Image (tube, rainbow, N blue to C red; front, side, top):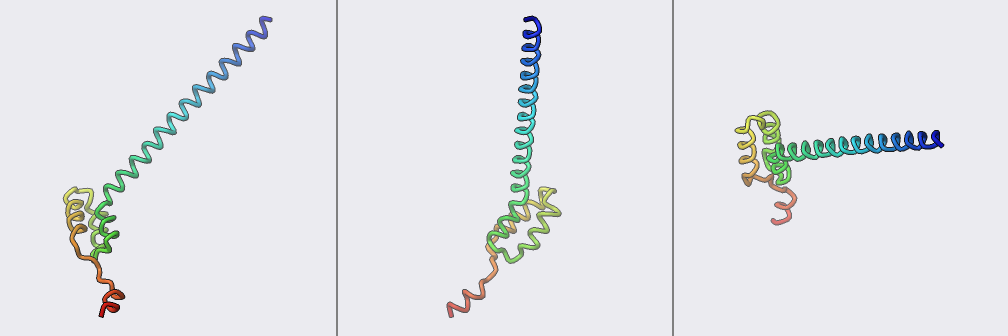
Length: 101
């Protein structure tokens, strides 16, 4: 009888230890997913001028991308890229111009 209770206590210890390890693993996984999500949000915010320029088919989209990529980290470069991307200078659509004539 003594051996059975010792085996039961050992089994309970193993199960509880596994549960603690699983909880720690899941907590770490949750923290990592939060870190990845936060990094994705920060990247989207950093490249917001680029996204605007490309979405609006800006005439100088390549230059805005370069400015945002290389000087956006300065803050002043990011603001400049955002203002430039917000200007209404879309590429003319050749097919639409020819069809309207």
